[in-house]
Figure 1 (spheres, rainbow over the protein chains, first blue to last red):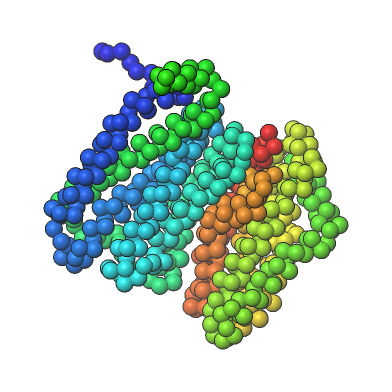
Figure 2 (tube, one colour):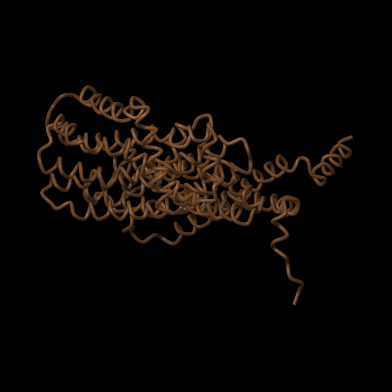
Length: 252
Length: 222
């Protein structure tokens, strides 16, 4: 057996900074390559949809963004909770770094959804259960970001943000089901997005490639943001000072 | 535990009784905000009757949120909140008592006022009962949820706006089933299911919100 890697070592900001620095070029590169291939297949190789024509092609951005928007929220709540319970600094910083990316994906999902809705449903927006709960997810992100930014004390901001993220995570299913019921109550099932027709495998390939591209992008951009937060918060520590001095010397 | 609950509750009620005008502000806001809607959407009775439950519920939500800004702020400012937390008594009970006090002072008047508001909108008997009952079950949920937001935003510059941003998404289920009860009655169905779910939401919130509020208070006061 090879020697075991101690994963907890990366809970230390300096180790995380080192590891993420090594990973970043790879993440950016794979995000770029996967996006290029995914978009090429999606826009040029995949056939035109029988019923929706060319407009369906937004799916290659819309669906991965919607998936990521939900996964990032769960990840954010998880890291925030870890940071609160275990007093792990790095976990709290990760949660802070994840929030803007999650909000961005939610916004992209809503925006591309509107572009898709106009040609297929004839409306930019319908108060469908999924659309409404995605909008509410955006509000939850905004609430988290606003609260965390409003508190000057970093430790208090992290803990308060963790509480909000956890409460939000518990409420997401309740909100989803209530909105679903509200929707069926008011107008009946007009659009069923769950009963989608079977997808051609080439379309699925493009969509999965785009999903991996979005994952790589999410990791890369979250790492960049987390590294900035690490430097900001650890500015007084020896390793940051040392790195800064080295950087200065190298520049000379 | 009961003594602590009653002590905090009686204290809050006494404070509210000493500042009567301040305690009446939420209900005044509620009535004024509601009466703006007919001016905005037009006086057709048919349309107004249809949107009345939604208007009443949304205004009740906003009135609750606006009054929640001050739930802990005054106690925080004069230091009594810190003393309460330092006594070693359960902060959960304190949070529960504060939420109960808030509901009695600013939630219950809204419920009692709702039938009169419904008459302004030409609602008929059964729908009025449904509206009042749904508010009776739903407004305590709002007070409990809001107290979490109030505790989290303690001492922050833009606390009022933040509470609204944090708590409104969480109160959507109460809104949906509260207005749904009236809609069910209007459609000639039973509102039993809506009441049950509102009750379930209330029980769930009563069990989870006070501990969350207590945690938030400790975070904010620390």
